[in-house]
Length: 346
Image 1 (cartoon, rainbow, N blue to C red):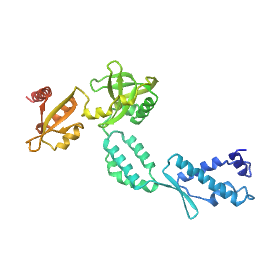
Image 2 (cartoon, helix red, strand yellow; image 1 turned 90 degrees about the vertical axis):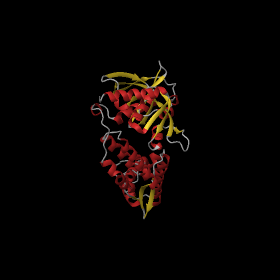
Image 3 (cartoon, helix red, strand yellow; image 1 turned 135 degrees about the vertical axis):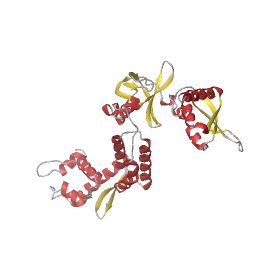
Image 4 (cartoon, helix red, strand yellow; image 1 turned 180 degrees about the vertical axis):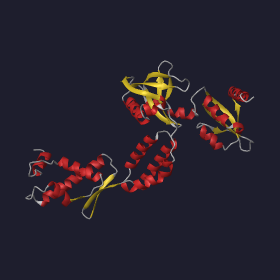
């Protein structure tokens, strides 16, 4: 007879109902997780009331064994809590420290500041963060994010997001597709045209950048990567298994972040410009940039590398505070754009 069978016999009630040790452990674990207190007397009355002849020592051993089983599972599953005994009362106390609270607040503030999800999705994600905290920290967590949360304004989304999948549902589908090397089919609204087109691709990497989630897809014909903005994808369905040989390392997110500023359009170009604003502001915009002017020079000169269309977008936005000095091709492009803009006001 196995252990559970022995326990069932030991715990057979007056009406012939069995309560196995695994059932007891599950009941106790749920009580503790829900914040309830457990005492030996209460436990014994619930599970051994029908065994008046059973020795108290044997009952206590069962009680301790159940507690030990729960402790083992907390450790195995890396559950951030431990069972504490105080005045013969057992409770489950979270082991989170103040640094854990700090980490949750930092993540929440970054999430809120990104404006990347709807208010409904924000509530879902913040609730998930709060549930990872010990009860004593939950009120502090919500207190520290209240002002930011109450003033949350999500980026304006296409109406189809509410009519179709939510962003979180889309993320679920893409995560499964990447894990299982599956292709996905979806309709896509490009920024270059007003119509929607159907695409079937195999996503390799999903990442977040500049307020949006993107997926990277390899074009097997042109041997280059295309990016799709996840919020512009609708009616996503998972399809057949695709190429299982690729590795996520094939798409270099490092290179993308070093070279992309706002837009990944145009051609990669290394350029230099005079910077008359606070230099660090410009350096932050171009991650792979550096100051090349010498101490004592009248102007700060910065060298950067980026996709030219994205760079132009930012450079024109700085007005007379920046001046591109090389290469000539980029200088001429900017002159053309400025002349075209000036003619609109003639």
